[in-house]
Image (cartoon, helix red, strand yellow):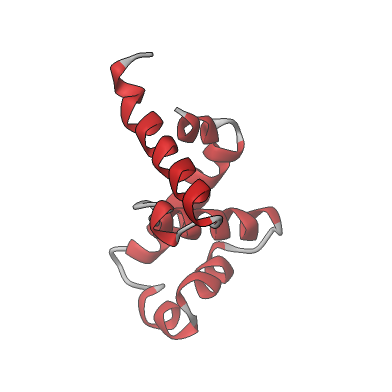
Length: 103
């Protein structure tokens, strides 16, 4: 077993030990994914894109109508860029990039 996987094996043994001792899964055994919020936005953007929603409609679903009305026409285009990048990342993950989470 390569040393880089040791922490995962130790964590798995701790989970099994907890399940064996208590008969249930502890929430502490499953900490939130640090990238969870970003991945949620990416997956929601991908879902909108697959439903053929416009980027502005996707932005409204993600950030709310008020924020989009305020920031969509901003010359810097930060909100538009964020939606565009989220859709692009979602398409990448859908095309096989999800495999990076398995390593």
